[in-house]
Image (cartoon, rainbow, N blue to C red; front, top):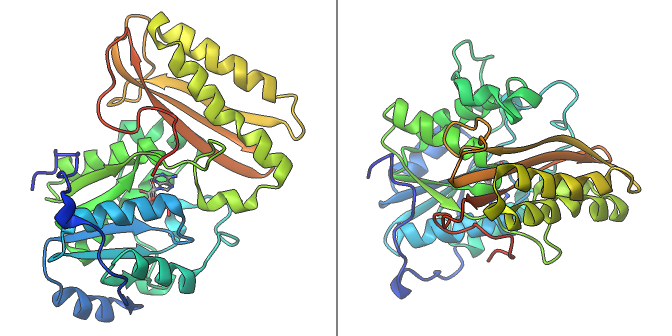
Length: 321
Ligand code: AMP
């Protein structure tokens, strides 16, 4: 399959979810190689950091649809130290492997690869992936080293799992764009499939980090999807109107208790991640990052500037599957 393709094959009824499985748990490279070797293809990889939630389940379901009843889904569960900066939450990131195994079983995964830090990085890597210009913008600017860490572990996982397809979420839109870029630029030969953002009924994008939020912080955080929705509604009036509408909603939350601390709000070209200029028409991405209390949250929406219909699924802020 081509690395450029991004939409998953249509899943017919025959590809419906299979009965719960008992995935093999591989903790070492050797165990994983042995389990991977026996898997019937196509092999579909779902890379995660664990603490699996509804968003991850949506990825697992798409993976199962793509693999079909005769293929195999492999899930990686690894909290990747390389992508955490000093003072970030690597130490307290939720680790729930037993529950994650049950979720993977319910969603029909064949193998869960959950290596230790030492198993994944026997030594500090001296050669890592340079994410290039897009990797230095927005999330890359706020979290120096983040995308280099993400791309390095994704490349290692592709090498170890040798998947036909890998599934990622649009929740991390810039990460997704960089993974596609790496896959194309380095000829990795892995097809990238995408799942739209899955939201809780109140609109908040589901995230493993949401468990950190107090009820008051959560209600502050809800301004993120509301701001995106307000911005998307203003799309016909152009980029400045989108940013003004979203910014106005975020501004109100600056005085909430606890206040929302905005990191960035940006309307960008979905390929270059550079600001969508006044004359930009067609698809654009509205991206936001902010802190509620100590928890950093990101969210995004695809908007159609100049009245052009946005491409693909996941364009609205309605609740996901
Ligand atoms: P993580 O475990 O947070 O590293 O995420 C693993 C994968 O799940 C990434 O491809 C994320 O983009 C995706 N993901 C996380 N949360 C969501 C969500 N709410 N909706 C869709 N995909 C998600």
